[in-house]
Length: 253
Length: 253
Image (tube, rainbow over all chains, first blue to last red):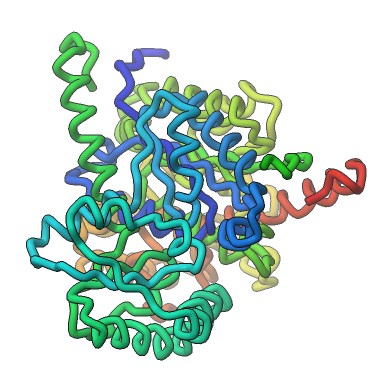
């Protein structure tokens, strides 16, 4: 009855997820939506390490703790063993550990900040000042700053008071399911950054685009989770083409 | 800087998914919604094998082909190697291969038909005749019949013409994004089964609950994907309690 042979496998994406689990599910949907596919079989193969026991990244970073690291490394090793050919992390703050993860593996580890700034540049908005709405840890760890500086774009961030009372409070409100409250807080913070001269916004925490969905702002906004999904699809299409060019034809599905 | 030790890991669920990828993402969301958790860290750890290159299960089964099998076995082995303690398959038709997968592994492989019939019984509807809306392969392979028979419930299925022109056509319409068309076809098929005496319905293909969302029918309907998610949460809470009872306290997170 075994009339099938396994073709040479397609390159697989490894998702180091669970931070939090709903953001990981949202990232999977964005991956699927961004993939040009006419059937199930044309979609990207993905292994998802959706293990949410990683201690809170923001809290750890701000306290100078390395508690998330062994969990992240364990996830990386699991994804390597499952045959993944690249890694993506759908959590902005976890990118604090991005450079260390890269050093631990031969696989490319896509960077959410690079993907988001690429998406901004591709939109040809001519943005010179970009407002960043993110956790305090993402801002302090300068997850987006290198990519922006490399493209001569200035970062505008909320002052300490606005960050605490509006941005951090709103992220907590989304995690607690209070979306309407978060929408009011984030709309105010976004408008404050625009008033300070931001000509585009980076919604650099997975909770933020959820709360700002449908809100009309006076500047274009980039969703880094969506940008990372599109970068993964770009990686995959290239890797698939390369594999097809090198594989014997009869082993292609 | 390494001030953290890894606690004894929690039991992990392995999701043999990708059939199709959007149904897998939907299953993840249902898992999260069904889990009693007040923080990210209290959610279930899940490894997802979302590899959609598995050949179409219905086509293969109806043609007497075993083409999906090596893909399913490969997914099972990957999930075992990733440390999973139980397996769930968010695809009704793939349950054609459920018994063979069970024989290949020491892990429990949850059954979508068992979960759906359990959910039906828990609702205490006193249903004695249940209408099944599913792919032709799910019906022919009798995925739900054993569980129903064990509980003295009769299965009512569409006749060949209604199956082809309404149910199979509607599943194709959902896969092609034509939800409105599918809703009309499935509402008609559901009403036909109710007219034949069905006092409850099983929406036994991941595409069907999507199309029937919001449609008011004269009989209660069970979503087996949701029932499987709830069965997984039940498995996990038990497995976590067992592990906590046997683990030394200081290694608990």
